[in-house]
Image (cartoon, rainbow, N blue to C red; front, side):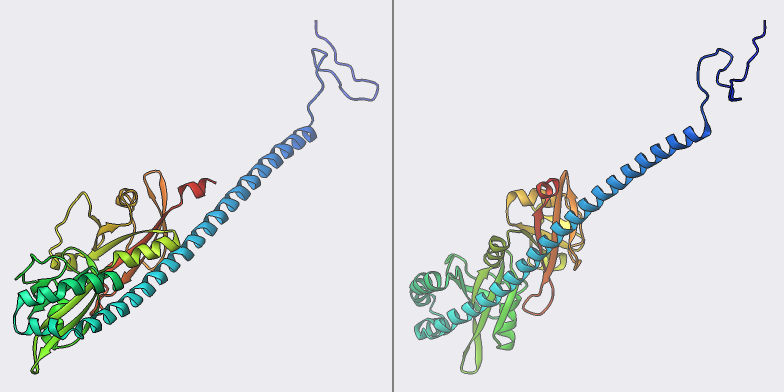
Length: 315
């Protein structure tokens, strides 16, 4: 039997063939969709706001660290300038010791050692904190090394360009130079007797002193490298356990063993003028580099100031 659907008193059909469920209207569907869309939109807005806040906090952290990196560079440059002035004062004090210079000119190594030893210990070390003093014959042959009296006769003309320049031109040479063992601040003064250059005296301060000073105040760590050409000239022996090559630079001086391990996994351009936030494994590392010119005005050295921002970014 077919059931007849009868209209209600107001003329609407209220029941289906089973006589139970109310009809779903188009206006009800529209309201539901609007609510869902609104919730979805609110979710997007909330996520976008969170991302924007996080991005702003990251930018602010990077900007603050950049300020510290700029401070590091200034502190380093200021300390280099100050130490070079100190080295010059030490050399002036040394040149006033006529017995020392006279012994060198007349090739009396025993007398030179007798004069140098107390001066090196009592004046250079105690008053100026200078750890390296050397006498050279032209062009750059070691005659006496105050911190290692056993060194004698080594020809360093290919490595110690400051000395070769001073003896070749008869001029005072001041600035940064990478040697076989260290990168140092050097002051080299020619020894002239009877209008002839007899040799040169050199004092050196390791560059690490200026770097440690900048690191301690700024709170940043550092890594130092040389361009490959200069590294080869200094007869630097590549050590895969220590050295890190980035583009044309070889890094081999680090502020700490921990920084060294993190630095090995950092991929960046060391000669870029801009800071970068780069990964090192699961760490986030800030790095900003600057070049350092040697005594001849060539940017042979690069210093990268580094900071691990991982924990700060999580917070």
